[in-house]
Structures are given as C-alpha cells and as structure tokens.
Length: 120
Ligand code: FAD
Image (cartoon, rainbow, N blue to C red):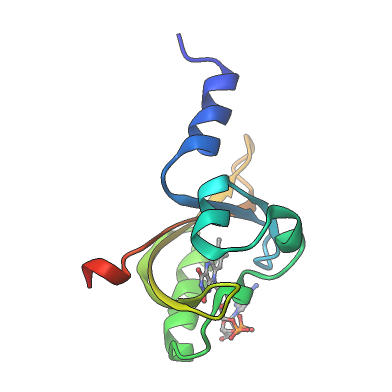
C-alpha cells in the first residue's frame, strides 16, 4: 500500500527537477534535484518567478506557446535554454502542466525538467 509519505518521498527523491508554482509562475516548492540542477537553495527561490531560470535567449514565442497551452488547461513540453545560479547555461527538457483541485479548478502549475545539455 502506498501512503501519503511515499508520495512525498517520491517527489523529494525523484531524479528530476520538480517545482510547484502559483498561477503567475511564482515558485512555491522545489525538490532537492531542482536545487542540484540549478545551484539555488530552496529558500532563495521561494516566491521568485520561474523566469529566474531563463537564460534570456529563448524566443518569446516559445514562452507564449507555453502559456497558451497552460491557459487552455493543457500541458506543454519543450526545450528551454536555462541559466544556473552560477551563470552557466544548460539545455532543459521541460514539461509544465496545470494542477487542479478536487473541484477541477486550476490552482497551481507543476514544472518538471531535466538537464539534457550532454545528450544534445
Ligand atoms: P514573461 O514576462 O514571462 O513573458 C513571456 C510571455 O509569456 C509573454 O507573452 C507573457 O504575456 C506570457 N506570460 C507570462 N506570464 C503569464 C501568465 N501568468 N499568464 C499568461 N501569459 C503569461 N521558463 C524558463 O525559462 N525556464 C524554465 O525552466 C521554466 N519553467 C517553468 C515552470 C513552470 C511550472 C511555469 C509555470 C513556467 C516556467 N517557465 C520557465 C516560464 C516562465 O514563467 C517565464 O514565462 C519565462 O521564463 C519567460 O520569462 P520572461 O520574464 O522573459 O517573460
């Protein structure tokens, strides 16, 4: 039987960078792998916008496509050029999806990404 503790452990121990944001992409939670990937401590990211990871080279149309999908209640998958805290650039394979409550209202967004620089 899988309990709530295992769900928490799954997110905390997953070898993927996981984040939960509000509807404006302000970061509310990041898992340890997210910190390892980006070089930020969890506390530093609290309340910061997810755009903190943008290397500012991805065309705005890509982000517009991402937000269009989210606004339609759909998930978006793609590759973004991200920036670690130390300024290093990395290629991120990113999936973002809406999180709905029991009433079906979208309350948060879920981000899952991994560094695919070496596989590119
Ligand atoms: P923005 O100010 O974000 O604007 C870019 C475009 O997005 C504009 O057209 C704007 O109108 C639109 N937009 C922005 N916010 C909203 C909104 N709340 N509703 C509707 N449209 C909006 N970006 C990365 O670069 N790397 C990541 O790893 C990454 N992960 C993300 C994970 C999650 C869960 C979410 C929700 C977003 C993520 N983003 C990521 C996108 C990020 O939030 C920014 O939109 C992006 O980084 C561009 O930032 P910006 O300041 O250049 O432009």
